[in-house]
Image (cartoon, rainbow, N blue to C red; front, side, top):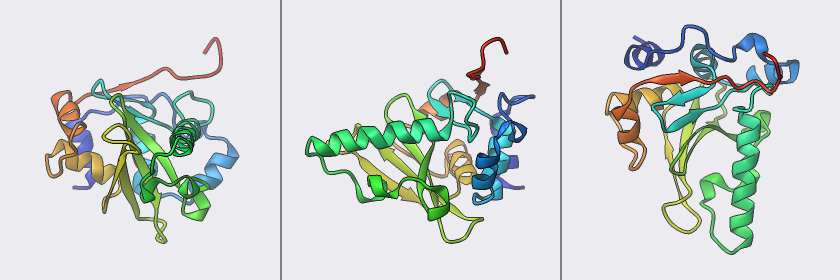
Length: 189
């Protein structure tokens, strides 16, 4: 059983995700070719939405308000502001490590309501990524931790209780549901 099959058995995906790969523009498609198949399948299966009531999952689609570009820019901007105020930002999530995807950059795939950002970290192998969890509120500048797991493996490991991320895991496990969100920028859809 793959990690995605295990995850979908634990947390049922929507019958029709809000945003699917057919909604991506050509630029996004080009960037998507540089991402792992497991991540692309994960996004195609779930789309944009919320795990439990606490973790927002973002889409690569630029036409949704829940997109990885927008949230990554927001997190990067917040880090720049905090760093300019004198806080030390963890090396794993330094601002020069973000985007572009084709240059082994980081981007945010999900974030919790209590300050955890979940990053996709490219590796030299296209089919292998790491997850970095950045808890921006645990101390001044935040704390970052790298997991040698892909995005799908990370969520599956949390729901199967193979790993624990303080302040994140219990909230997800308590409500093993996924709610797709209507997220279009286009009025009248």
